[in-house]
Image (tube, rainbow, N blue to C red; front, side, top):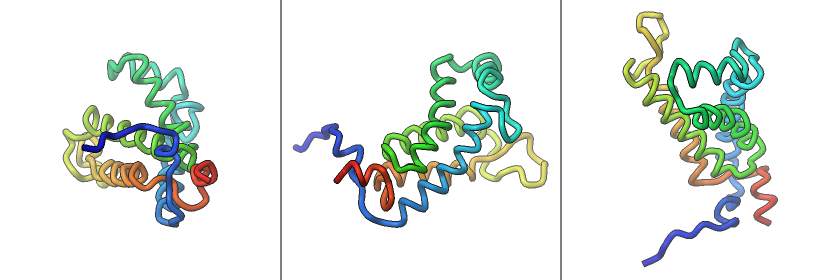
Length: 152
């Protein structure tokens, strides 16, 4: 029986395909906007202290989890765009998206709140985001990724 082993090559291993490039840049750019809201308060966000306060006081998340969510959304998105530790960054983003679904959106059903008739947003956006980031965990960063350069 073969056992799974962790090594440097497994983190950076990737092919030369354009598919992962498109997925990681698109996902990274979308997530970077959300991360920037949480870190800098741009795009209508609350900034680092406001977001930490919301996560810990309102959502009752542990301080470390709140910090990890912010770090993954901001730094993980930059890593995705660059294709640097793509698998690790994509795994983190998958975990964050799953956490968001479970804590904040699953009770509103499938559909987003396009017409303002629901009390919150459904999970359809997150299904796509989870699928994209999970695919990157499997494939790696693809063409023009820093991972590919390191792999060589």
